[in-house]
Image (cartoon, rainbow, N blue to C red; front, top):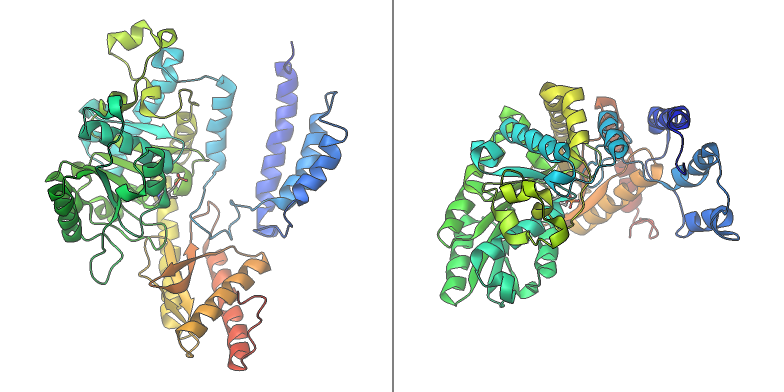
Length: 498
Ligand SMILES: *Cc1c(COP(=O)(O)O)cnc(C)c1O
């Protein structure tokens, strides 16, 4: 046998589990982000792995773990660190790792129902259950004629939604491709994955219409959307898809789904809701209003791999009609023909995505739901929303800071107030962000809102607690105070003020 003997695997497997447990237990003591020069990892690894070439002979597992400690950990950004507040979280809870291990252990490839029935049906059941738990409405469940699937990313979800929309919009699409009249409606805040989907689908950037926000907000104006679609239709163009975002990546803004769906219905455009980060909050009844009107849309996506404790990758995509994705994507070569598919009684998930092959991702989602229960998931969401409220309160009460946008769930955008004008504020905010990040105690990212530089604090790591947010606030204030003394002397360090 060329693989490990299962008994040997059992023995070595404990060493890997020990390694992970020790890494997670010690995370808080590591700098969130490594201080590493480009090329450093390649240089270190080439010395052991490529000279003279990849190892000819097998090496022991312990040596691999040593290399991970020596080379990988010091050059890693620790996304599971309690001080990670950048981008959006990428929760990889320990519960979800159990499911990942089981999936790898089974090693099944669930492209068709027949290639591993459990891989398909476990996914169907979990997505039906989560649709109900999120309040999506019975029409999004397989039992109601719709259905959900686990995609690798919200970006892929947007792409397949667009392909289904193109297919529905034109009976010619499969034969002739796009004709240049297709139009896709987004806002300036919509995630770049929509622009990418438009490019990948061959529509060209001219197909992308940026709809204005409602006055005084960053959310799409339904009136502006209706006007834009009508003007396009009058000009012989085809409104194909509207993307409504629930929780934009920049500031967590929420497009009004119900009004958008109503406006789109008049033009027959597909409505896709991108709730990659914020959608999972709908597990809590008090946040369900975010999805108001979702029963009117064609597709809805939220990432379990951001804020729902499930290790990347697990993006959940539901459609209101289970036939739409296969109608757009199914191509069946002879070798994939089988009786179960022909019977029409099964779902073949290969027809719901771009790749043919697929992992048994539902197991890690199952492990999360099983290990935390819905009550635990709600508590996870609520604890971070409460921490964000607390931080927002501190920002409001401090004249040295201001909120750059209304806080959204667990996302707080803030900037430093110097009293010396917008440019000085922007510079100070940038300097504070750079210094906090250089400290290694926390990691923050930035955004530009209304032309002004702001710090994003995305609370949501699995182990982030009140003490970590308090420590962050303390450091923000210290760095801002340091900046103020300097900028009042006009001595902002040019190397760090960008
Ligand atoms: C993160 C994010 C995406 C992209 O998510 P992936 O799953 O990494 O593709 C798309 N839309 C929004 C609103 C996001 O926040």
